[in-house]
Image (cartoon, rainbow, N blue to C red):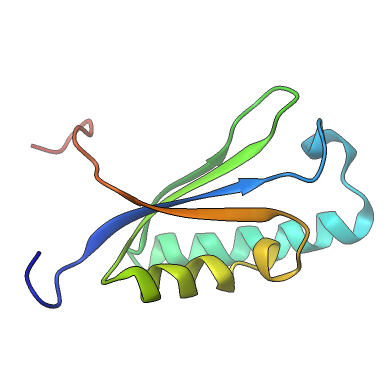
Length: 104
């Protein structure tokens, strides 16, 4: 990859328990509102590609985004209020969008 090029990354948010989306406590819901504002701003800024949870009893969050390198990607993930609060655990991986509807 050329210097200064942007790469795609994904981070996974692992909920602390089954059915997390349906059983959030008030302090968790407040952090989740901050999380939503954070990822929405990154989407509006052109950093995030997609964000969402898996549904069902296991609620894993998925965030696919662009960052120039691993350090920048880690800073984005660790800046997420859901991660920074310690409510969820997170895992960062390099990612490559191979096929995307509407993209050649």
